[in-house]
Length: 90
Image (cartoon, rainbow, N blue to C red; front, side, top):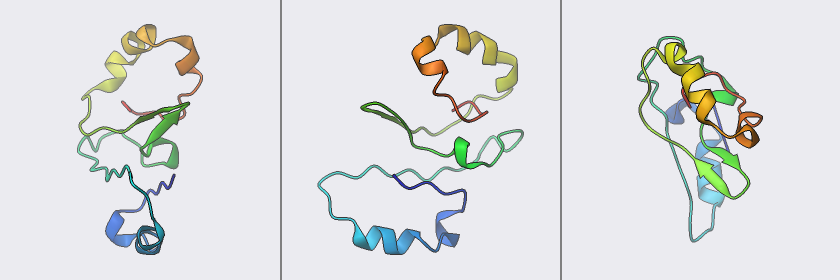
């Protein structure tokens, strides 16, 4: 897995990594920070997220996420709560 906080066009590692990949399946995600406000650019907020055999990445955002965060957390199994590293709607 490779993550970066750099835009793909500024990431010096991206092209060498892509040239060295040989696989029948690859997941790629380039995030556009459309929410902008309070999303916090950090490594922990970068996709993909992997827990066990599951991988998540998404597009979009939940505006005013802080207002809904507690509601969402009540619905998440405790097994997954401990795996949350970032601080965004991801």
